[in-house]
Image (cartoon, rainbow, N blue to C red; front, side):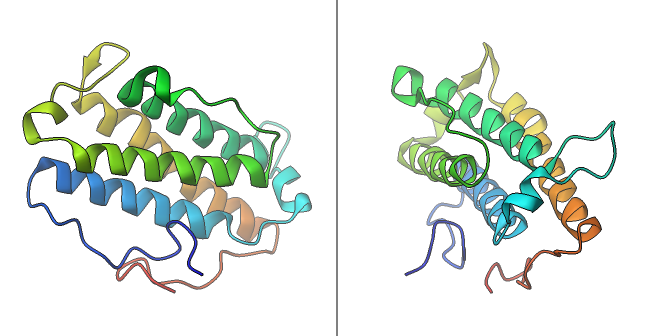
Length: 161
């Protein structure tokens, strides 16, 4: 059975701002899935140096960014409690990304632009937490290489294994 974001070969059925945002969330979910696939407890605790966060702390930060978007988009229905560090945070972050995508898919174009994040216009979602999360996914991939457990092979262009 395919896991959320293991593959994102289905395109959004919309050719509007909602479809573009949906695909951006797909890309983040896919890259996060593969950057964190097969991490061991040793990997989660790995840090490349004393001034760098561990992989687990970076995953926790991505969880926080994802939760922030979900909470702002879904309101009280978007409240999540942070699970213990590690794989549980990874799984919940992937689920929250799927929830965000489904919410955007259900909106009409005008409603999308009414969404805010901490009172800021929708555009801040893209240049803020979504872009930040993508940056941190790359950080996880780099840290994994340093820990001699590189990201499993997958195709980031076609978005499948």
